Image 1: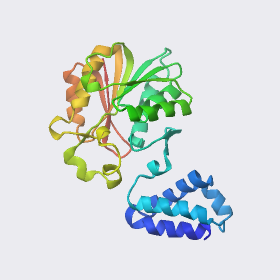
Image 2: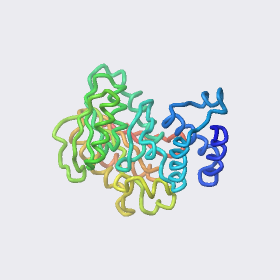
Image 3: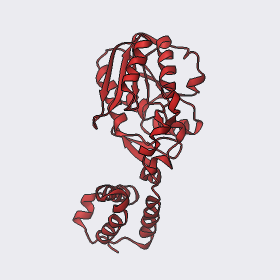
Length: 282
């Protein structure tokens, strides 16, 4: 079977589940990852033959996609802020909204003229910490996560992307003091309430780590309150706190930061128009 025929078949098989556009994007992601070919290569050579070995790989991935296993986990890699990150079932798949948070931090802090000390709490794949280390030159970047398996992935990603991040295995909810001062603390902690599970796609609900996603309905801000309290102790004077947040809890987050004494609080929307990021200054 040639590549053009298989492309048509592949997209048809997945369109009912994902839509034609996303199915097509999956095709080209696999093409590049597994066969080191780009869309232009197929356009120039539409009759390129897929070998039986190629088809075996493609068909296996197709069946896994029908089970709604995230393609990033199937390929073992994803892009974030122009960098490549290894991902597996132990870490959340980095998302575009989080790229917006990283961009905000970089835009705010790239011209300070000093070496910043940054802490990322709940680092997962390391996408925030590594992207900041890559783009804020001379910054000292530290990252905490409760999961040993997640930290193993984050350490690989730091090495792959050529940055130095100091990773620490630590349960932030059991932490009373961070033991040093930071200029910036950032976190994208678990924030999806159980009542919102019905809004979550199956590929997230069934395969991404619940430890990094969900909080109880009656204590949805548990991580935010703890981190903000620690930030009041461990941010340097005029230090900055950034969070990615639950889109439905923007007002509650403003109230929390005001209650804990933060100033210059700013709530921002993401590209989809949802309240998604918040900033406070010590």
